[in-house]
Length: 135
Image 1 (cartoon, rainbow, N blue to C red):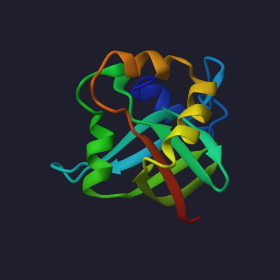
Image 2 (image 1 turned 60 degrees about the horizontal axis):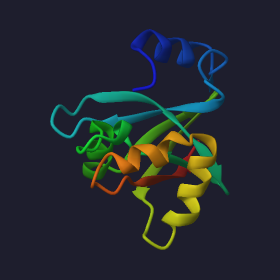
Image 3 (image 1 turned 30 degrees about the horizontal axis):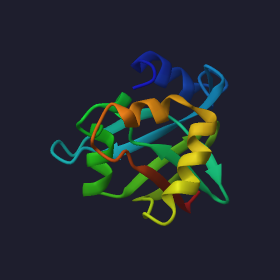
């Protein structure tokens, strides 16, 4: 997670005026449904746009296990996304093998450490595409 619960709360309360810009990049809030608990889980993630879609990376800093939010969206791909003041429902999917090279380049251009994270693990770090369903 990029920053703590209080920061997530401030992002939501200020429509991203506080928290959208972070260490030279931009952050969205992704809300998934816990695959075991059924509870809503908010995670701040670095993102980039690709056409109408939003891209995020399930890196967990190069850990061998994927982040919990990624496991949650595999179980239930319907998520809520907040970018600044724009909150919407989206369908999450893992980029295909054909799509990934282009999308990976987009994401490493905004956060070069993703390349380093990939060298730390044998797990292929996925790029996740968030496709807007509704406003």
